[in-house]
Image 1: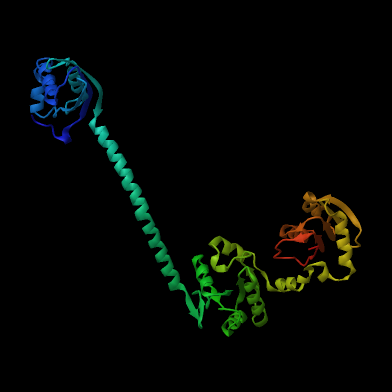
Image 2 (image 1 turned 30 degrees about the horizontal axis):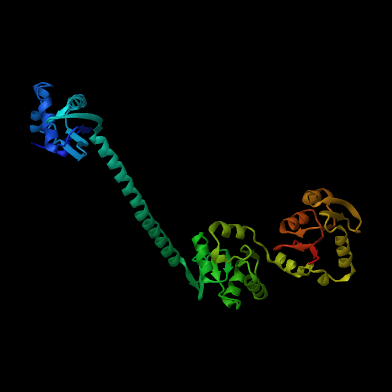
Length: 379
């Protein structure tokens, strides 16, 4: 029997077989051809259709148990949809296999092309996932490599110091601690940075600071404070910018770098705040009876979660709940605030706008800018 080429198969007729007796596969196939003969006319004669390859080899899978045979069959067809349905109905008319009663039930006519399409889609999805997981990271790595090589090619030496390519010609320079800081600024497109390489400030930096607007961009730690102090002593620094507390310049993302530089302050303001560091102190450092009186006032409201606002002569103006303190500052504009809470940077900023001179609280958080406000704390 001829077998229809798999690339011409359009449909697969799938059915189930139940036979009252023990039979073999050839018995089932013979019964189908024998009982369908002459049933559908010459054009749909099964034997002729199979000889011409329009019907494929009938596949039968059968098992026998306890005197009964059950199984499945598949009839491949390259006929059109209607003719295939007629063939399926003809197969279902088989009621005997040899001497045994039989029943064939057609369960499905499967569109072979649809099955191929599903396989095609699934395979395409697998290939696409593999492409995205394997190729795209390589592209990203390639991009990073190119970017890194460009950045490395852009970093130069200014009289022996790691620097961006624009240091020599720019009107202003950004002074950072090390080579990694210069590289990180180059990532963000900032090309006028130069590194000091430590706390020993080289004469090249002094020369640059004398000729150009100098911005010291320091780490948000004690090391950054030390470098800024040294810079201010030997060089003409105009502005100071600081990384967020606990972070180094080389760790910052582009947005953080830009924000830090936007928040730069004149170095004179930094010096003034350093001079008033004694104002950010414990009561022992505050000295004098004034701090003692303020702390006594603090003790009297401790645990009440309130704030008392005083004028210049330390006469109480009003008492408010802590949650209303910041809003009250703008309205009352007191000279001194004593409250049962923690002095934060937000409160210091609000107090500065209200021209408050003294803040007294239980404790304080990290304060980077005091705005020349005296801060007295119990702890």
